[in-house]
Length: 119
Image (cartoon, rainbow, N blue to C red; front, top):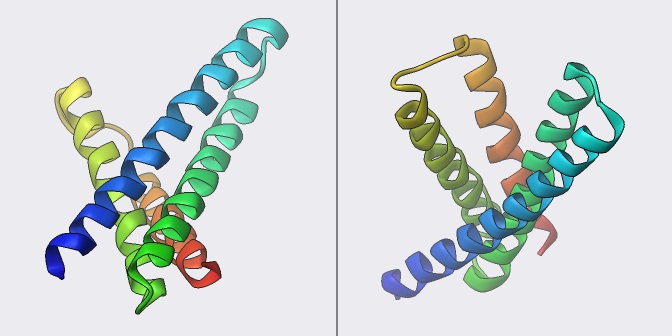
């Protein structure tokens, strides 16, 4: 049973990251076409975090069927952890301030939890 929960979590993360890729490509196109400002791009990236973690949390909660809020939050946290790890690897260390990192963690975990509860 624990193995199936891990599969559900991994599947929800995969879908979240596929959606993230699609949305980031769309954002890059919009940035190119309309010369968006830094604030607009930052807002859009946070919006992408919310949407993808909501979907991931919804899928995790739907698959788990029990403690949906927990599995949704777990999906959001796993999304953040992978995002954070890849960012640290690409930047060769932690960049930005701890407040931004905590805010993104809160956004991802909270959105995932809301998605889980909505499932």
